[in-house]
Image 1 (cartoon, rainbow, N blue to C red):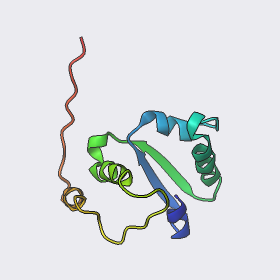
Image 2: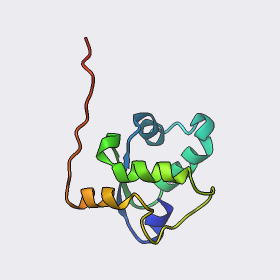
Image 3: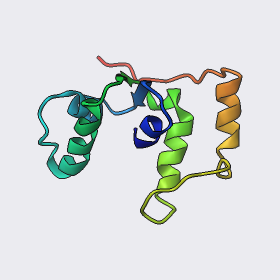
Length: 110
């Protein structure tokens, strides 16, 4: 959100694959438990003059974000700007560009 704001974007859609996280940042309660500081920081951004839309997407619907979340665990903590896609991300970017669909299989519930 910091980068989007700095680049001048004023209509941003944030997609999350975790409903708990979406509900946490969209609520007015800033408790956030162990993520309290992050939730407060996000709420600070909500007060700016822009339009943020929050959407829940299944993990299968956003392989790029899922890849980057896993990739983040392999690098040092801190802010990183990637000038090129990390190795392995290119195939997911290609899938996004060509609108390849991925099926989500859910077990039957009795």
